[in-house]
Amino acid sequence: MRVHINRDVCPAHLAFCERCLGQFLKYPMGYERRCFEKIEDDGQDLLTIELHSGTHDVVLKLNEEERRVIAGEGWAYFVDFGIPMYRDHGA
Image 1 (cartoon, rainbow, N blue to C red):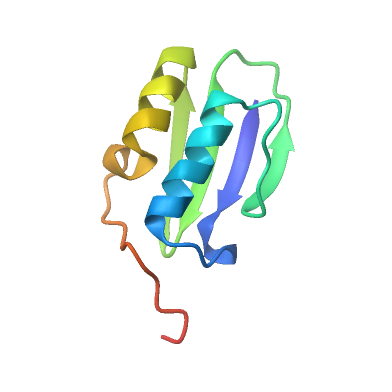
Image 2 (image 1 turned 135 degrees about the vertical axis):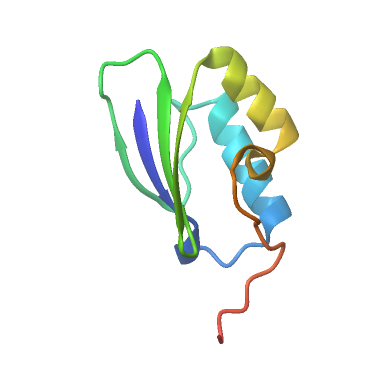
């Protein structure tokens, strides 16, 4: 499965975002949120997440065990850029 996520369309703070994405990682066939731009069956065993946040884009390719780890730890620990807790939409 391949999922395109655009964090910029949801004003939720990081803690909510991590919990929301964590639920999807646990239940990918039954959980969809407003930041999801596209979900497609690519025929792969890995879950591919194309994540856009601010000026950053990252691709995560996760097996079932990695999904469980990230669901518990939060995705922000696994990307190579800083994620602010809150976003200033007026800037």
